[in-house]
Image (tube, rainbow, N blue to C red; front, side, top):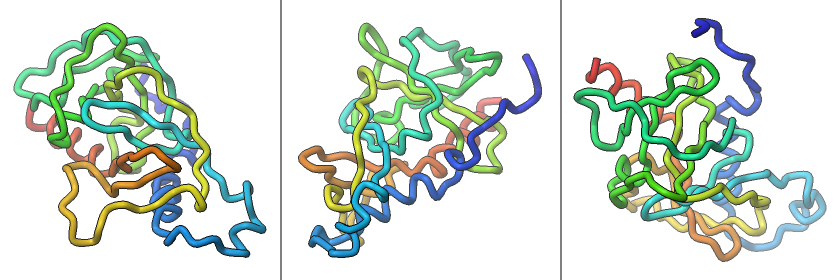
Length: 193
């Protein structure tokens, strides 16, 4: 296993990439002449990822690869949402179940499950990638300001690891707080060691 960090797309690893989706959701849904003139130039390529109990909306640039599910190697004394570790391109990656982490639903892997390898956003992260259990293949979507609406209120208590509730066209989704998730993974790995 190499100790070198593989080349990363720094633009994709920038926390601003996920915040673009959240900022686009904050508009009130009213057409704006300036926004209409810019049109597709402001569109973001995204992915809808089905996890137990919810769909997650992420920028496509955060996805490194989609793998078929194989049971991970368990980590002793880890929380239930930290399913274990998988091997990927010479790295040992922690694999999480987002539905369990956020308290939305129990999420066992099995037939038809996939694993999404995500690029870490935090520069402080020891691992440049982590893996997330999903229920099938991610679906590519185009995220535009005119089709994305913020659904959570300022006073609403959101599930753990969730930045906002949104609606993209007709699809309800959650925007995960990937930096918070990475921090939780780091803490869980440190406590399990």
